Length: 263
Image (tube, rainbow, N blue to C red; front, side, top):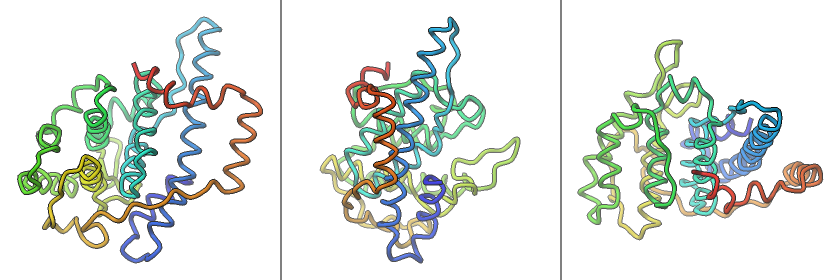
């Protein structure tokens, strides 16, 4: 539910003065939930190995994880984004991803956001299928996203905005869209704001204006960085029970463990 609500907040931000607070609330729930997903996948691996088979619990949704990383960037949650990026690579490299989504749906924008994260931090990687490397717009952005002059980046950003509009639609059994109607991101430039926030964190200037219909208010500029809400009673209860049942819970989910497990 948290993923659905977070996407809905992004889609309706223009009509919601409290959209940043609402987004922060639901992304916080997502953070708790995705840790649970990853932890149970790791425990399944241990049980499967003990039983003498190589089965994996494949429950990692690359599309929603990348979108939520972009939401964290929009909120200005640097530490949260770093953690989520390493968790995502650990999940991918342990083959926890949803197979059909990863192999057949070809979500190039989401693969791009994860590849951009890897380029940003510099010490993590994943060997993607060929489709992740065949979009010239994203290859150009990966090559030039750190360019000092923001105006030099504008052609790439405008091309990415155009691609976003082309990649908005309703999924079918044969056609899949990076910004499909299920997640309501047809008019939400998550990948553009993600790039701009990473540039800001790198101390680089961003274009004053990206003249494209996709970059309409409130997405015409990066919002101020938001504070991270405290865990509410429900989230605290979930974590308390997990730690009681599984003493190794925090160790498995620590950033150092994720970094060592991305290979």
